[in-house]
Length: 101
Picture 1 (cartoon, helix red, strand yellow):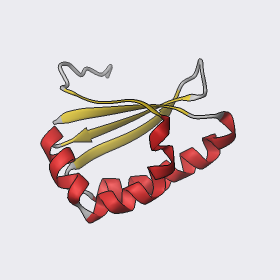
Picture 2 (cartoon, rainbow, N blue to C red):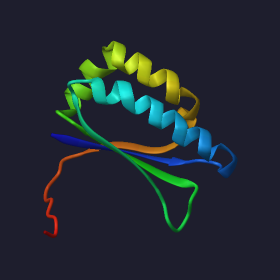
Picture 3 (cartoon, rainbow, N blue to C red):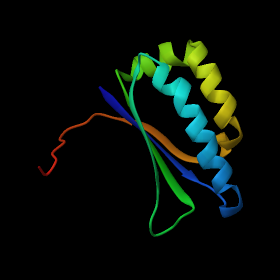
Picture 4 (spheres, one colour):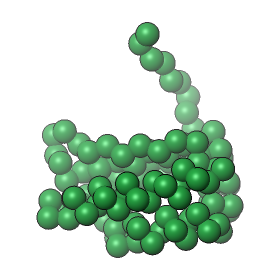
């Protein structure tokens, strides 16, 4: 498993549309066999900052298989107007994950 983080800066006037776009885009994203989970978070201290966290089966599945799929084409139709707002997009290997029970 690999974790992708996308960091966006979204103007307050566009935030409602951005959230709606990702709500719709999450449907084809989660239909993909390569996507394990998806999460959208908005910064508490600076509400113009958003993080998308996506767990993929692997970075190659994401970049080589998902991006060539119909699911990706559908996903992109919802979020393509926000591509220029991406500040960072990277894949990370999860080292540790603990939860308080």
